[in-house]
Length: 563
Ligand code: C2E
Ligand code: MG
Ligand code: MG
Image (cartoon, rainbow, N blue to C red; front, side):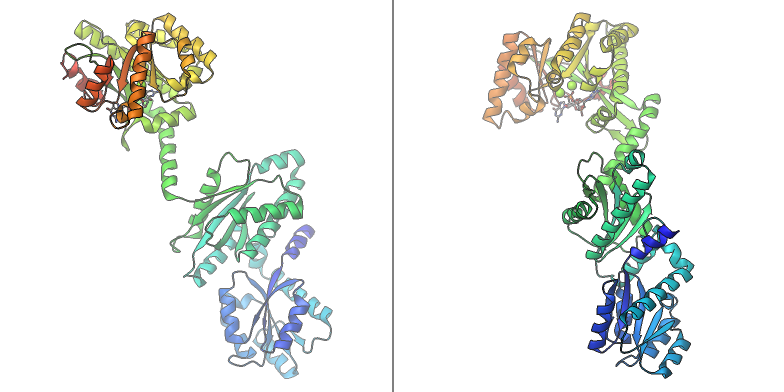
């Protein structure tokens, strides 16, 4: 309890002096300003205006009686009629005993005689009055967070709304600040030290908030909230907090993050805005430096969308929401163009979100590790499909499946693929494995080992998206692969960019020299096909021949002669 009082006493209270005489204003300011923030009003009307627009609560009013426009007694009467304002204690400044009585009757708690001969007495009475008022009102006692003396969440909410009420024309930001990895301080140095850090941090926030004319509260353990006028960015703000932490408390290693919710509609509740700011704050992940993030509705929508996909993954696998499409690979080197194989490309037909393309969810599942399970599912589907078509047609149409870089870390990956073929009743040479070029360039030795296992097991290896990675030409000679698949971007640009055309031709030469099959991806026009044919490309996969199709539609392409 003693500690609590101590901390609360450290907070600079705000006192409003209502006094028309300049000399008296100055004397009082001199006496008070070391211990208090002081505001000055010239008369009763002016005082009302200031109280209503003040961003900080006023702890005490010191009121002169004789003033123009609205005198002290009238002001006192009005203020005591106001539910909110009547809680503010008022000390009357007076020369005449007559007024003392009247003002006490009207609700003043004390009076101080002019001239102010004994500054210590003035200070003592002021301190006592504020203390009594704060002790007396339960509401006020509960205003403050026990540990730091900052506003608690409830009161922060109230004051923020008050700010809104009186500043309807101004934009305000709600910021949630969090000390990064605060639990580590607690674990390393103990709770007491942890508390000290929280208190120091609060002090810094308080002085920064004051500088920016804002209010600050502690909303939950190591989460703080600040409500301040809109800032274009928070670089300066972050820097100021950092500097204060270093200078005043030697806490340079404290890293914090700030989530900012920019309010465009003051009808949104403070609670709602706090949630959004906190969401932003929590979304700041890997940090070595203190940083901030401003709420962007689009980005949040995106994040929520991704989170939904991650959540729905397991069910989607169980319910077979992932559907494998097939895209024809057409041999263009004979007179008649015929399909020689196809690529299995997964799609997610989500019960609520509809069609989702792999470009959206594959990177996500590569990040969270689900891609291995998804790919296994796709490989199985593709292998059974090869078997079904083999039985129906009497011959095999090989299907290539994509192997993600992240699949390569699975134990016994090759064994898994061999088993899938075995279970489906197909041979390993009927399943082609597309491995992106970038996979080759990472941790080459380990990858090489796995790829060699694939080869030995009889799989056909295709280097996917060739040209998009960074493998050196030298590395190419050491790689085990059967097919080079030129990255789609080259085909797209080759007819408009001479330099691209040079590369397309160059890759054809490499393939010829290495005696591997050459595939071009992404051809959409006959002109592109003709150029590729002339350059010696064996196979083309592209919208010109067919888009990826679900199995039942793809089947119609089996005996088709493409043109
Ligand atoms: P990718 O393996 O390079 O697949 C080729 C992509 O090019 C496919 O996009 C295909 O639809 C698209 N494409 C083919 N021809 C054309 C064309 O003429 N014009 C245009 N604009 N696009 C064409 P999709 O199906 O959206 O797949 C994108 C990527 O997602 C794939 O690139 C692959 O990296 C990945 N992916 C797809 N399915 C799987 C899967 O089952 N497992 C893994 N790990 N990755 C997959
Ligand atoms: Mg591919
Ligand atoms: Mg590709």
